[in-house]
Image (cartoon, helix red, strand yellow):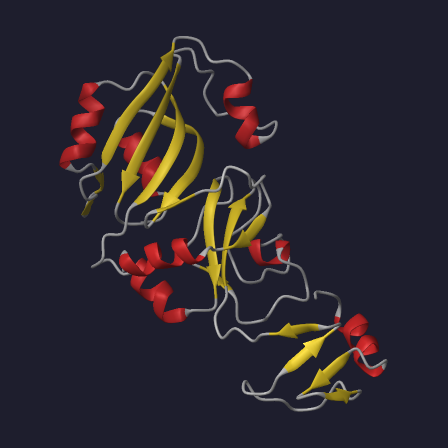
Length: 248
């Protein structure tokens, strides 16, 4: 029963809504969570918390609002509830799994540095990833003078000595990586348990490699729904919610 505020008000005035069995024609009538509200013959339920999975597209920023750039909440539309926010952040040029909710306690627990919640990414890396880089990630890569990342799991999926156009166009539209990829491209999967600014990019940079594309494919035991196209979203299932709460 979605629609714009104007459309919904018009339907209420026409008698499409009943409250406790009585027709309600006043859009401003106050109701409580114990009232039975029926809209077009269907019971309307109020949910204190909402939980969404989004396949974040390239070029959109992870923020609640911005006067210059499109945000992930803009994708949800102007009629979304106003207390929603993204859980954590993905860089503007990173795509993939993003959780959106209004449950502040859950978000805080998922993002707490003490919880070490898994975040899994798929990436294309400029150059050949070897056992040296895998061992460095497992030990903990020093990415700044005063910061060493927690041990991370790095897995090489494939290596091609020559990159093809679709390697990065599929995730970054027509924007090519900075390098010419003369050293080939490695397809990898990496799991980290913290979320510093540009962390994965900095970890590979410390190993003299560049991240060409980056996609988050899992978070806190929840896997990205492959049926979701870039920019699409859906409600989390009850099973996914149980998994989330177990991980925090």
